[in-house]
Length: 165
Image (cartoon, rainbow, N blue to C red; front, side, top):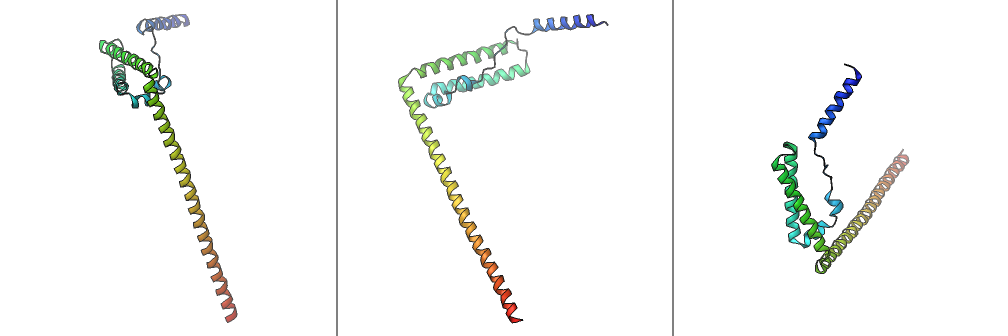
């Protein structure tokens, strides 16, 4: 086979793959990037929490179907539709919650509580480190006192033997 025929054969194969693959590529959108406050809002709003749990189940089912089935299978398409509709429902609910003043006050109170808890944990860790440091210093002083006492006993013992001889 010549080089031209191999190149043309490869181009033909790529052309066939283009026909088989879907034209639109699915964007990989991590939830944390766009839904950075969802954890806080889920604690405040039970409906959002339920939607998010359903979304995670739909995402899991979709992943299972994509891994083991044809991407053009009707079940996979239904799973995509469920995934997309739940994602849209969560986006809509987040917008509603962001615009609700009573929810915003709950979120701010929850965030303030989380900040207070974090400060208290930091203070307790700092106090534990300081107590541990103090405890280590005391242990070191006791150890040095014992070492010096042991050395004095050896010196006294050596002096006693020197006087006895």
